[in-house]
Length: 288
Image (tube, rainbow, N blue to C red; front, top):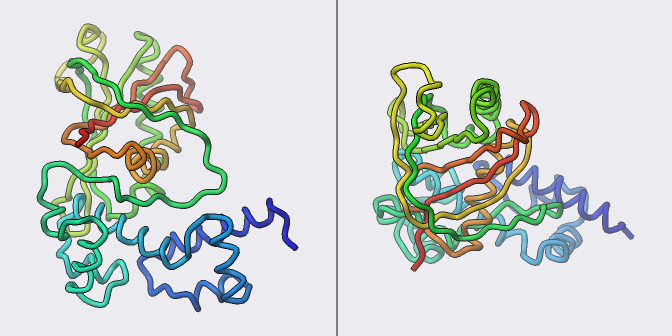
């Protein structure tokens, strides 16, 4: 009989493989072949360790990623349907509406991104995180904007080094002048091709410290309102992955919708180093 630790490792490895193949043809037989166990034993262990069936997990993850693709790309519905394993657009629309209570077209157009039915990646080793709702006053910031595009699905794992290097450069500069700095993130459909997403990274100080910045900086106002507040510490390379964790796990657990605005990361520069950051995420949200 497998020990609990071995079962956890087995499930983590299996989930790694499933997540890497969500855009491929994925069925129980293929997963069974990967697992090295019988179909019955593999499904029983998965349900025992996660509380959900393998088929349900795979379907919910594909629907969650398809919802993100609707918001972050201009891919046609049929392309999103095929990418995430649906036979045709009609079937995708039916299953999507059953899960999110909206058709894919409506979900793409509404101002706020509804997230209560998002489904996170399973982890048997997830750390405890305290996500809470707070009202924040207006915030005046100034700084530099870095923009680029990437194919949908590549930002988390393949562009973490881009965010990390810009973050290291920022704290090396800002840490000489202030004790608090801000990173702002904004994601939208790309312009180069339908499957691209656009990323804006805003490196900023509060406006009272504008005199330490180079000329020609951009000013930006963080609107007052409701935010999800989440304390975080980690390496700069982990920012992207934790952002995904916020969207797929912590915001759905709060039952909120993501309203327009930038995701903010307040960095405590007094306690941050180039390899270990200390800060707090603020995500603009709404309830009801």
